Image (cartoon, rainbow, N blue to C red; front, side):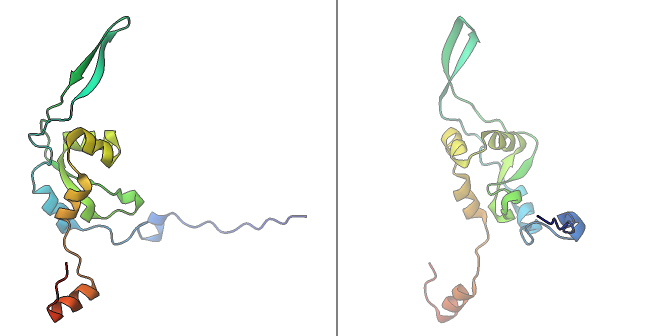
Length: 145
């Protein structure tokens, strides 16, 4: 015989007064990213092929997209916030580029199309982290790189 015990259900995260991943937001860094220009400004995509027409009169053509910026800068999070990403993984993209990055979904696909490594750009923009070990090494005058 199996006895079932009803456990009290936990309240949703927003009702508990917290976030799923606390400490991942940095308003000052997000504002600094918004002040920069779009990473895709003036870029052309790698050539890709697509089909044009209606069967049986289809033609395969090679196309190159030219990025035209529009609608201001949005910080695009390379590591998604819903998966524990931080605001320090944000890069500046205009709304058109942000939509394209979301449509492509993968950083590798974005790099293949536009030739921009989003993770490397996010590392460049992220503030330097000062761990206690690095602070101690800097106090001794040792090279921290």
